[in-house]
Length: 376
Image 1 (spheres, rainbow, N blue to C red):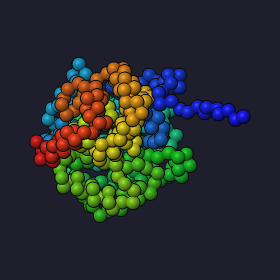
Image 2: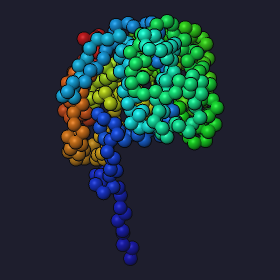
Image 3: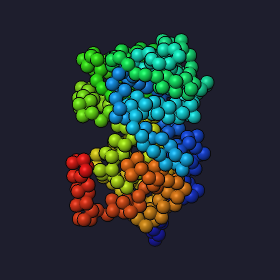
C-alpha cells in the first residue's frame, strides 16, 4: 500500500537561524542592509574614477548643499554647483577610505585658488581594493596619495575654464587599458563617474572617446550637477548613441522627486543616494522612477536596505507588515530631502495603499503625477 509522504517546502516566514546576520557597519549613517550591500559591491570594482567638472559654469548659484544638524536632520542651503559637488566628493572619499577602496578624482583642469595647482588625486588606504591593479602611473602617481584634507582643499578651489571631457575620458581609458585582460579574467570592472553640469567642448570626439572607454571592463555613471533641460536632453542623446547604456543620476532631491511619483512609500535617504554614486547597482533602482514596484519587489528592496528577511506580502500581508515594522524600528529614522523631516525609511500607511490599489488610490496617484508635471 502506498503511503503518501509529505515533501517539505520553503516557508514564507524567515527563520531566525537561517537569516543572514548583518555585520556591524563600517559606514556611518547607513542602515545595516545597505551598508552590507555597499561593502559587497565594492569588491566588484577594482578601482573608481571620478571625473569632476571644474569648468566655469560650475560657479552657477543653483546648487543645494545639505548641512547635517546635531539631531540627525539636515538643512538645505543654496550654493554653487561646485560646492554641492564638493560635498558629494567628500562623502565618496569617506566611504572609499572606510572600505579601503582606491578612488581617483580627476579634475578637467588644474584647480585654481589653492596652495598649488592640482588635477589628479588618488585616495587609497594601503593594501586595500585596487592596490594591486597596476593602474598607477600618469600624473596621479606622481602626485602621490592624498588625504581627505587634500581632497577638501582641492574642492574648496575655484572652477574656471572650459569643459575638456574628451581628454579626461581618454586619460582614464589609457590607465585602464593595460589591466583590461586581468580585470576580465577576474570578473571585475572599474567604475567611472562623470560628474558634470554641461556638454563637452567637442561633442563628436567625446562620443568616440566614450565608445572606446565602454569597450573596456567599466561601468559608466553620469552624475548630473544641473537640472537644465538642454543638458539632460544632451546626455539622453549620448546614451542613445552608445552601445552600452549610461547610468544617469540626478542630485539627491531630483532623484527623490522622481521616485516619489510612483513609490511614495520609500524615503529616499542620503545614504541610499551615496551608495548608488559609489557604484551599488541593483535592477530595482532603475525601476523606482519608472513605475510602481510590485509587492515582491517592495519586499526585495526593503530587505536590501534594512538587512532583514521578510515574508511575502502577497502571501501573508499581516506578517510582512509586522516584520517590516520591527526592522524599521531597528534601522531608525532617516532625513527625507523632500519634506525635510526625519522619517522612517518606509511610510507604512503609504505602503499599505501601494499594495492595495483602490479606485480612490489610483485617482489620487494620477492627481499627484499631474501636480508633479505642472510643478505645483
